[in-house]
Every structure is written in C-alpha cells, then in structure tokens.
Length: 366
Ligand code: SF4
Ligand code: SF4
Image 1 (spheres, rainbow, N blue to C red):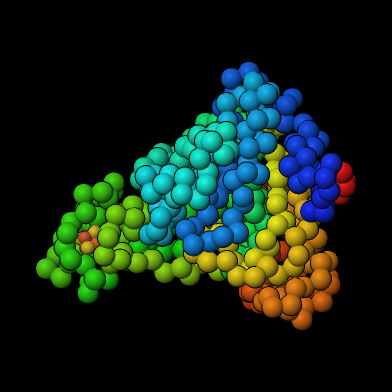
Image 2: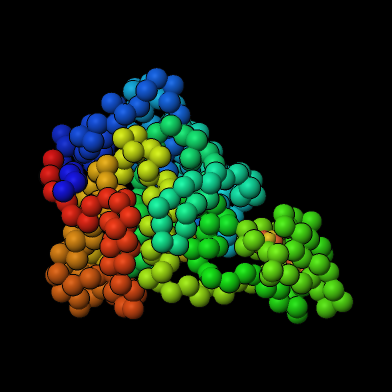
C-alpha cells in the first residue's frame, strides 16, 4: 500500500498553504532523489487562455526552490497539444505560459516546452503494454533526470477526472502519441476547407500527402498518424475522428504514463492540488463553478495511489450548490455531474495491472 500525504486546504497565520506545500515536499523527500546538477522537470499544465482555475503560478515556486536547494536545476514543462490552439506549438505554448503568469520572476524556473517547436522531439520508451510495446514521450521530459508532477485535480470528459495519470500519460505524449490516445484512425482532409496551400505536404514526414485537383489527399497506407498535418493546416481542413472508446483511451494513457514514470522511479514525485475542482479539464478556455469546495493538496511517489486517494476525497465531499454536481450526495461521484457517462475505473485497473502503481493507499494527514 503506497503512502499518500495529505494537507488540508484549511490554513491559518502560522500554517499557510505555502507552508503546507513545503511540508509535503519534505515528506516525500525529493531531496534524497535529486543529485547535484540533475535537471528536474516540473510537469504542469499552463492553462488555456480564458481559463481562470489552472494551478496558480505562485504555488510552483516552492518546488523550484526545493529542487535548487537539493542541487538540481528545475524547469517548467509541458508538451504541445494536437488540436489547434494557443498551446499547439512551442512558440505559442511558451507565450501562453508567460501570459498566464508562469514567468521566471514568479516561479523561479524557466519554461522549456518538452517536445520542441512542432512536436518533433520525442524519445521512444519500452513499455510492457497491451496496446503498446513502445511509447513516444516528449524528449525534454524524458531526458530530465528527475521530475515533479503538479496536477490540478478536476473533471475530464474522457477519464472522469484529470489527475497525475492523465497529466503524465496524455500530457507528456508526443503528438503522434496523443493522436493514438484519442483516435484509432488516421486524419482525413475535408475537401471543402482545403485551400491547396501545400503546408501539410511540406511538413508531412512520411510523404503521405499529395495534391489533387480537389485539394490535398492523405494516403492512409503510408500515414504514420504523427499529427503534424493537423497542426500546420491553418484552414481547419485536416480532421480526425475523436472516436476512441473511453475505456480503451484510459488504458492506453496508463501505458503512456508508465513510459514516463518507470524510467524515473525513485526520482519522480506527484502532487495533486484539490483546489478549484471544476467539471472540465484545463484545455477548455473557461472555468465553470467548482463541483465541491477546496479539499487540499496530496503528495506521493505513486501516481495511481495519489489519483485514487484524490478521487475518493472528492467523492466523499459534499457537492456545491450552483454547480454541475448540485444534488449529488456525499459518497457519490461528483465528476458525474459534468460527465455522467464517464467511468474512471479502467485507468485505475489497467495502471495497477501493468505495474505502474497500487490502486490502494495509506492516507497520512500532515
Ligand atoms: S495545409 Fe490544409 S489547406 Fe493547406 S493543403 Fe494541406 S489540408 Fe489543404
Ligand atoms: S498524420 Fe503525419 S504522416 Fe499522416 S498525413 Fe499527417 S503529417 Fe503525414
């Protein structure tokens, strides 16, 4: 049974939330896992512009300070999205991070986007999976010697909740990996939208796109599903069907999470922030009312246990009026208020089955 440390959101003059964060970092003992000069990634989500409930940048600084005190070199990181938007390439992603407050003066660490400008930087990692024997992990995240994973715990349409497993499994998958987590099929080009600009042909690494009279066309026999064409088309002509069964997507994500976690065992720690527990993930450009009141912060070396403990704490909490969970009782899954069809159990079971962590925990309140 893995240990999960818990600090309540309640605070007072001599025991602020910042004090609690510092205590949690000491309890999981990141100091002993960081060697002199270790590069140490702080994995987080910089928030979509318009969202107001992403992890507060001031809460990141204690992690940068503790890593530096242990002799490490911290940097903040995330990988690019596959959908078009303000985090889909390394330049706009970095700009979004700074605009949302993740600047060096606030956090004490620079931002390095983990998979490069166009998502081209990744490393293949062996995993003992049912769906994959290799996963494609964002290069700078994999190369970092140590990692702390900071997760804003909230709802998610595909997973039920978004926590540590989703943060590393989906979050650090390179574009090709993200595509394979969302869809079983290759992209297609919608003829009416294609202006024949040719960008996708120039960027396609497999040479699988050709221009026809009606517009660009993908040869799905050659296409590797890397997702580059999705990103470079400015006319929204490249489409994928987001049709993966949620249960399978969860299991695939667990295998990607394994590919991030396993090479860093003993040098990777997880912190879940059960604050602003909103119904949707941080990729949406808005924040709805929280489902339950703030609960606190959890820390563990086990990504499965910390998510299980976080999920159970949210279930046990009373739902808030004027939220999507209004009317749900203590003990009921509050995330069902946002996504009634989504069941998060497959990711727990598969993560445990492949040896990523334990689906059980000992909760230690500090
Ligand atoms: S980038 Fe988009 S608009 Fe340009 S040729 Fe390719 S599909 Fe058509
Ligand atoms: S997904 Fe990648 S390989 Fe397939 S057509 Fe698009 S750019 Fe080419």
